[in-house]
Amino acid sequence: MSSKSIFETEEDVAQANKFVNKAKDSPFMLVGIAGFVAAGLIGAYKYKNRGTMSTSVFLMQLRVAAQGTVVGCLTVGLGYQMAKEYLFDKKPKENLKSLHN
Image 1: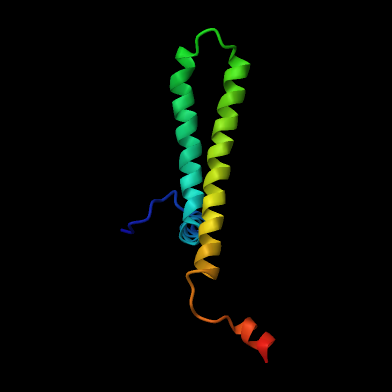
Image 2: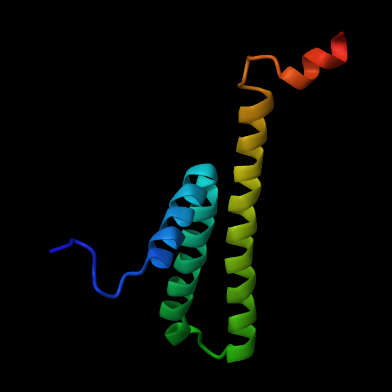
């Protein structure tokens, strides 16, 4: 018997491979998604103890917190990628060599 599930298709495997490759290319994307989920779970827990605050105001504040978490993580990730490419990489770029000649 095969170790694959009878419900698993090749398309599912391809999607999983795409997700793994994206995670390797941009690890801060996963941190952003995790932060978004964490903000949602914390918000769901705090919803019971919101006091006299209306539901719409609470959900608006929760949305802003979740979006801020994702944008912050993506910004840090972008800064890390730029620093890795331009500051930490000591190899000269091939396209820069052609500019100097």
